[in-house]
Image (tube, rainbow over all chains, first blue to last red; front, side, top):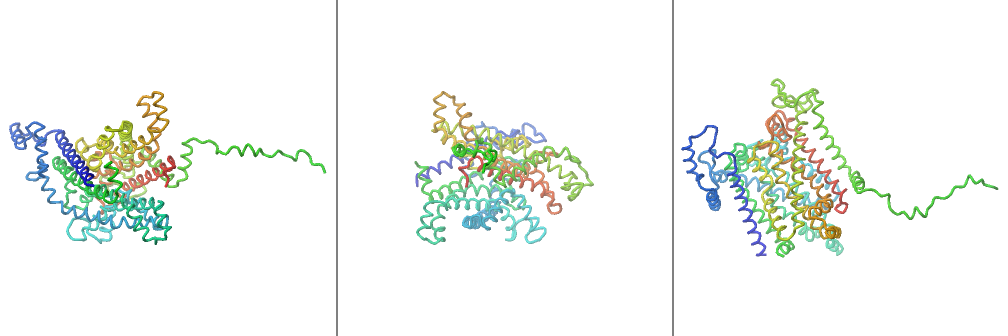
Length: 308
Length: 304
């Protein structure tokens, strides 16, 4: 197990390094420098600014500087707004985004897994058909369409919840619903198909043949195996919620990191866009690592196969 | 009593009929089509897709309005007999714009799909065929790409290159091939140990011939199925990019651009979001159903 974890940690370090390197060279490949604007600066001043930001150094030196900065968690300044750094943006918005994203993931798990199990237990029954149909429909709608529907009907028409902004608990409802819709639908489908696959396995038939009550067959025998793909999907699930949060935070005017990311893209604030990509990259490598370790803990087959 | 010969008829030749225990021979494609037809949702999906493609590429020629004509007086009109889907904030006919948007969204999806097909199939086939260290390295690269959501890579590429139609399908096509590569590699690994591969090798087939004449055709079923599922993903990503301002530029519009424009006036003019959104959802559903149908039709073993 220790060997497996070490292996995964090393892989994830490589991933993180690749992300940093790719973003660095992307930043360098951008057409024009960060200070080339419509109003042309005199060359001397441009040189001064470039010296200030060490942009006159050789490329490799800049690259190692950047690596060093990232290691001490300094993701660089904005080249568009003065006195603003990527770290500021993240520090300011992270707690809001974490709460919104965390809530969405928890709701998807707490609702999605049991509903998926229920649908699988009533295979082809009324519940199964309704739930599967709804899940397919929800997964086919882009998150901003769901957000639009919720805003239009629940906020504008019925006036049940505030349509946007952030603050009281009521403000959480619509964005959380919009954000978790896709992951919820996906988890329901995943749990359902994974349960259905296991229903036909020999050991389940044996358990039933021994006369074990259906409840215990499901919870003691099937669930552990059925949950393996669910746990393995935790990292992609987080990734989905994270990407979804870009648009949801933007639509609902929530002061989180996702909104800042979208704003940096629309403002062409390249250093912030890239710096935040590095941040997202680290966040996701972290989640992938946790997901991998959890999967290996639940399913010995995974670690044996990967180690062998 | 005499019975005339004319009232007798020879019995059918039961024996030789019984010897023929097979159904009449039908080709693989006919067989697949027969299985596909049995799936009603897949047929509906196929019909919807054909309808949408026809509407998008032929429809605008029959429309009374142009997709780019603006009119200040006619802005934000609700759906009517004259303007079937109403008009947008600049008084442009939304029906024609949704049709034209379909051209772009479908084209993006198809081009991105083809690009991803080319890259993913080649990559997966090479990894699977070479095996060993090369395979390991190539698949680690795919793992690294997959750890970061592909959407973020697409955003980075789209930010780097100048926004526009070409950028979108390049960005999507250059990134979304990892699933395809994994799938082709798995098929190649399974196929390459089979006897027909040994035979081809023994007859001195070159590596290229092995890949393109023997491996890829045999792996075609999963490839086609993956393609149908990847097209809605591309449409999603395109609408996502449009929504954050990295989409095609005016007066052209994709469904994503139309939806994000419609979003601005959601409170007062909900139809401006509803129609493009419905187009995206229906297309996604249709592709999913067709994909399911194809999976069952092309590979009966996979049937659940």
